[in-house]
Image (tube, rainbow, N blue to C red):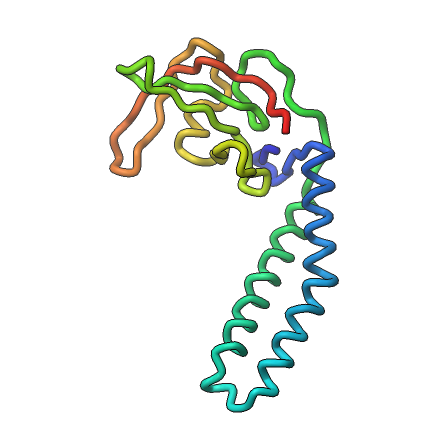
Length: 165
């Protein structure tokens, strides 16, 4: 998955289907479930001191926010193929880097949007400082990115290969 400057988000078919299924669940069965929780909590009495009611309303707000996010994402999505194994870092690729000054200190991560994150591998957004620094670089090249404290850090691209779930 990758985002371009014209707000088009490229998704693999698998990612698109997964996000669409989540949207359908949140828009249907999940809405019914949260409405039932709110109704049950409302029946318990005074709403000002009803923790269950307030928790359910907060959950409903988060759920509706996610529905809006997914709707916008899928409306602007373009479904395409995973990136080719060209040795150039691009969204949708697993990137292995070595930190400057220590070739044994390496990190492998998926360069993709948060919606594509999984528990299998750490995910960095292409818009993150590290993601911006490595995106478009070739294997063997150095990349610079800004640390939270404002200092610059260097990494070397060791590997860039398409992500396979």
